[in-house]
Amino acid sequence: MKNVDTRVRIFDTTLRDGEQSPGASMNVEEKIIVARQLAKLGVDVIEAGFAFSSPGDFEAVRRVAHEVEGPVMCSLARCKSEDIDAAWGALKGAARPRIHTFISTSEIHLKHQFKLTREEAKKRAVEMVERARGYLDDVEFSAMDASRTEPEYLYEVIEAVINAGASTINIPDTVGYALPDSFGALIKGIKENVPNIGKAIISVHCHNDLGLSVANSLSAAINGARQIECTINGIGERAGNCSLEEIVMIFKTRKDLLGMDTNITTEQLYPASRLVSSITGIMVQPNKAIVGDNAFAHESGIHQDGLLKDKSTYEIMRPESIGLSRSTLVLGKHSGRHAFKTRLAELGYDIAGENLDKAFDRFKVLADKKKEVFDEDIEAIVQDEVLRLDLPERYKLIKLNVSGGTDTQPSAEVTVEVDGKAVTAKGTGDGPVDAAYNTIAGIVKTRSKLLKYSVNAITGGTDAQGEVSVRLEEEGNIVLGQGSHTDIIVASAKAYINALNRLEYKKRDRKETLVL
Image (cartoon, rainbow, N blue to C red):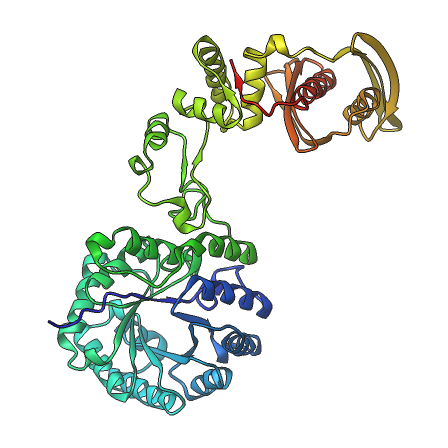
């Protein structure tokens, strides 16, 4: 029985095509950092750049090829002698070098862009593959715009360049025009109609103009392609390229059906995604498959309930498999009682019965107002609805007067009751709220830090009641304080006092789980 190649090689072009994303250019040092992560990821080939295009790209290809170990190191080159020579100049001495040369084969490109006949294009392709083979054994040839090339002519070119020494044949969907069925049929046709195709690996390079780059790459693999060219986060020219993390996890997750896999260490996918985002400044959309912030986040109550009972109910992959520590249950208005109770337990509260009902009702009211409910919000709910009798107010705001203006140093006079005794003090600040906070902090002698201050109008109009939220931190304890009033300065002071009281409670010894 003939052996079937079930391994799909991953050719990463983040450093070349990915860098062609507007605003995504990387300097040499950044390319080396990304290349090292790609090597750790386990990609088979790194296309380090286009050596002839600029002195900077030449240096990047040279340094990546010589300083990063593991993958095959590749430079792109047009079917021009100067490009081939520059690619070899950058790669010479590398452990595993490859020259990747290309020319268009579609009638549209040959007629309007290159001004070449079909015979002229084929002749140049053969000559440049032969020139590259004069330098090294590993040569890849790409028939640019192959998905819009007349198949019979494409077969001729492929046969000719394989005879010239190309060991990898790349079939690009350069403009993202192909559909999965037709692109798969193209790969199948190449396998059936190119006599010497058994001497080469078929590769594909799909663009995402119609959002089909991953689907087209998958269809190609099903029909015999054994190298896929892709980028981290799917970045690249125009709408980008086939997303490395998506195609890799398709093979891993559906190996039962596809029977193919890669050499990728998938636990390095999320770190690689974050690294590329950080260096290029191109952030991943939250709902991006595999590596988006929401990919393993669950808010629906039904989904959360199922997930808490058995991960497989709503997760076809484990977050650990891509380098995440765990799934996230996002608590919001769609969350159910099960998820809420689980989060309470994680925070140290074992609440049941009437107390759980009260806390959950309050949570749902808050969730209708906020996109996401944080742990501090939940603790505030518990302390308000359940622990109210156990949360005496050490501090109470008695009086507040502030002054300020364009020519006046903002100041505040505050009276706070501390453990039943009224204390009055004056202070200044950068603004009236800052002055009030500085004065209050001096009275209660707090060492806490203000992490966040936000204001929301509860009602409309100039007489709207304002709601202020603050987050304080002290010795690792983080609390949320809230206050409301038609005077926003008073609301700010009430929120600060509220947070200080919560901080006092949280600073108590709470090592044991509270059973309420």
